Length: 89
Image 1 (tube, one colour):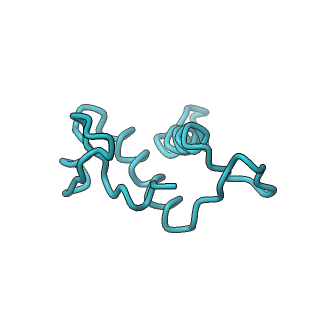
Image 2 (tube, helix red, strand yellow):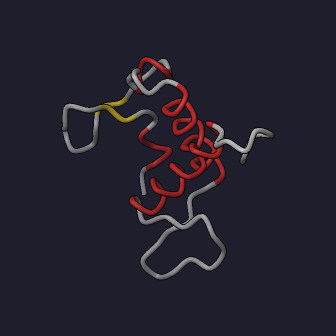
Image 3 (spheres, rainbow, N blue to C red):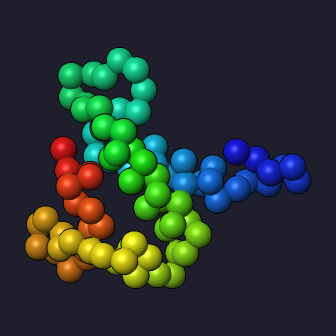
């Protein structure tokens, strides 16, 4: 998305980030899923886009502050993951 002034919008940056996250998690947002990829469900796509948009709009805040809740990282790392069930494979 480009604004009337021909500049990048937070929504377009969040959409690009969504594609980066999907690629990193080996998920396909396109038709025709390859054998090494999975297709995320509607809820997972919307939740992840929401997290991306909030991250773009509030880059200095942690996800738990923005989303209002957090789940521990599945690998026991220090970071937290918001709604881990929505992004789990």
